[in-house]
Image (cartoon, rainbow, N blue to C red; front, top):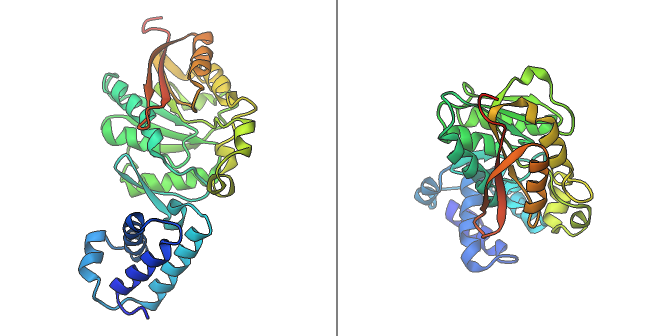
Length: 291
């Protein structure tokens, strides 16, 4: 019988061993109990001998049921950490993954050399993880988060508020496959992690991705490159002279994405790897200042 926070942790850990190793089940159980109780893990450890509310026990049990049924842990928790930021997530947005740190870091490193108060557009923003990571490191940047999905933008707005960036980060609904509205103005940099999964890859996605994550944010056309073609052609006009375009792309797509950039007047400056040593992101420049 569950009486204390410690009892709840032990039961949760034991249930998780149905799919997890003992080494991973323990930290996951602590994460579930502490997050759903609204406590830090340090506070949870301090409270482990105190009585646990029945309502919390029921919520944790239901969360474990969802996870054991295959739902990704970030959706079960309703939040995830990316680039040191605590972010809300829901099935309306992709789960922020460590792979995406590659494009965020590439943009941040270039952003350090931009003019004062640069304007940066995070296109196909989803949860807003890339744009918010950039804003967290470039303290004078003005960042616009753009997505076609209204529910995704609702999540992004919550993440702006959660990370206290309302003064420098805003949201706008934009279709990345269409010509951009003029009211957006000009940007020093556009960064994007667009949908890039191919038609054949969509059929082979892991069940947890295929069943729970938004297909709208995954499918990039037959060859996975539809968004790169549209964005590179249509959004280059939003860049200031000498502006930069920074993309994340899928495994093996680097050469094709770079070819699209070069065909549209961009110079590829840098290609970089993710934490798994797979090529993941590219930085390119359009035109030169003064032209």
